[in-house]
Amino acid sequence: MSTPISLKDAERKVFQSTFADGLWDVFIGCSFPLQLTIGPFLSHSMGDFWSSAVFLPFWGAVYLVIWGIRKKVVRPRIGRVEFGAARKTRLKKFSLALLVVNVIAFILGIVAALGFGRLPTAGPPIVMGLTLLIGFSAAAYFLDFPRLYVYGLLGGLAPLVGEWLYQNMGASHHGFPIVFGTLAGVMILTGLVTFIRFLQNNPLPAGEM
Image 1 (cartoon, rainbow, N blue to C red):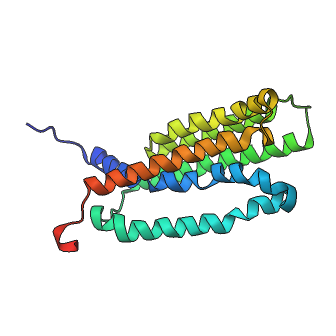
Image 2 (tube, rainbow, N blue to C red; image 1 turned 180 degrees about the horizontal axis):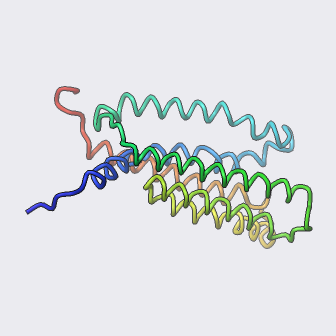
Image 3 (cartoon, rainbow, N blue to C red; image 1 turned 90 degrees about the vertical axis):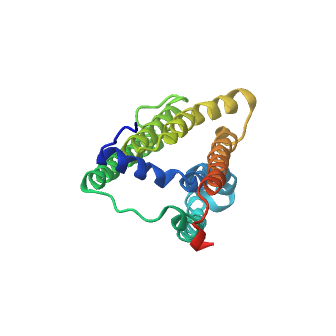
């Protein structure tokens, strides 16, 4: 005898299916981890601002490609779902939490840049790691996207490991190309594997083929 599930649980499962195709993993992996992997090599010739700004068109292109794949490949397989008021409220809370985290990170970045308090060597990596951990954990909670907890833990450790590699192994650019390149690779590879499994488990309906 099957156990009936509540409408709330059913909506939660459908909402989680939004991330079942792995495309969000790919997009996140192509965003800040990839920037922190390649950007340090560009900062010497382009400056800090332009070495970051140059990624904006790339992110836009990746987003458009993913949007097209969702429309042409994913939606015919799972359809389109409108969520209720409770789920929309949860998304608004997530947006607010993300805004607060970003504001705090921005303020701490300014403080670190200006040298207020004479932060120790480990200070900036700790601040950056905590910001990534908190941001990803908040997203995982509000979005019901458990893989973000793992990414948050890896992202939180990345600046500290990078600094260790820089101090002890002579890694360039505070180890960012190594640790964030690894993080980007993990996210993108996870997303691609998940997407392939999604296609295998969700074939097109007979009428769509």
